[in-house]
Amino acid sequence: MSKRILVIGAGFAGMWSALAAARLLDQVGRSDVEIALIAPVPELHVRPRLYEHDPEAMKVPLLDIFAATGVRFIQGMVETIDVEKQEVGIIGLGADTALRSLGYDRLVLAAGSRLNRPPIPGLHDHTFNVDQIDEAVRLNAHLRSLKERPASARRNTVVVAGAGFTGIETASEMPARLRGILGEDAEVNVVMVERNGEVGPDLGPGPRPLIVQALGEMGITWKLGSGVSAVDADGVRLENGERIEADTVIWTAGARASGLTAQIPGERDAYGRLHVDRSLAVKGVPNVFASGDCAYAATDDEGNHATMSCQHAMNLGRASGHNAAADVVGQERLPYSQPDYVTCVDLGPWGAVYTEGWEREVKLSGALGKAKKTVINTDWIYPPKSLDRSEILAQSDPARIVVA
Ligand SMILES: Cc1cc2nc3c(=O)[nH]c(=O)nc-3n(C[C@H](O)[C@H](O)[C@H](O)COP(=O)(O)OP(=O)(O)OC[C@H]3O[C@@H](n4cnc5c(N)ncnc54)[C@H](O)[C@@H]3O)c2cc1C
Image (cartoon, protein in one colour):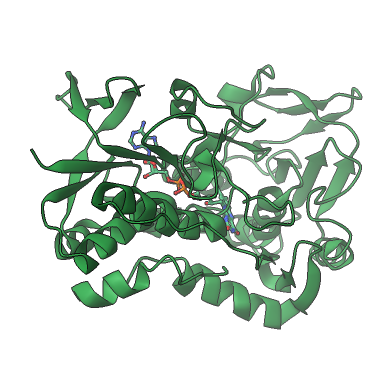
């Protein structure tokens, strides 16, 4: 019977895992190993762009790329993982709801992450978010519908809960988006609420002064040191008792790895990511690799670890797929290594701030930063554009580190 490498997820990590596995099998001339990838849809969803104005456009079809490289696509959702039996339980979509099982010789768990939704009263019913395409589309429809409502300060106010990377990028889009809907003269009010004492608590002191300057110039305000304690249809209450009336509340505060990580009996970090060794194998669990937002992986020997980012997910993907295939064909695994690290924070019409290194030293800002962000968001993070098999496989080389 032929062997099977099973990849869960068609995101940045899953797609590149499957392609990197195909590359290695191609190199060693093995056509008897199946690479199967399971996901709800054969599309890469470009999550880093979901704060932009056209979220529906942020998907890229993958079937042709998979066909060109011999990756079998299985449409469905993995519900269960049994590491003893080495099989997963899948339910199909639509009418096909029967649970069926599929065995694996090597598993790559690349099911990504979801927005963290703590049990704050009203959060589920009264907030929007930009975590997944359908949710960003729902926010878009809501923003467009605001013009049907009577003008009021509450209608024109957007609260962005969380002033981290996603909160800052989302807030920066809002003034122009709201004016595009409500009229160029509309008085709009965009407020970020952050429990920590700083804007961009994880971004550090390097880029913060420029970010604060940009937000100020765009008229965005923020309230620090007190988180959201309750949300209702008319606004939010903060932990310090303060009330903000708003027709739109966008929750951006934090991500958690896929719940599937809890079915793997390995150690997990505070975000639910599985601890992996340098080859991205889950520590202590035979034949299972974790990748992308599901993996807590060292990027170097200096103590740095991958962030939940497509910058890391793409390269984790290439390495995990390569190593899963290396195991099956009896080759040495490669250690994952990604010492270079950058961030590029989109600040709407003001531009962007681009930093390099884990200390986040600012290298570009304003229009130059924006030009870099545009290249990252429209080119670097996209799947291969060519359907030429050898070109796709060349791009899937784990030695080809993309620093986006
Ligand atoms: C608004 C926003 C802005 C961001 N900005 C940036 C940025 O500027 N730079 C950056 O580097 N990163 C950014 N990120 C983070 C980045 O999008 C993620 O880190 C990245 O998508 C992780 O890739 P992944 O492949 O691990 O997971 P995902 O992209 O989440 O893909 C997961 C895949 O698994 C599938 N899946 C999930 N559950 C199952 C299941 N049970 N069975 C089968 N398939 C399943 C999903 O359908 C999907 O195909 C941003 C994210 C958001 C939401």
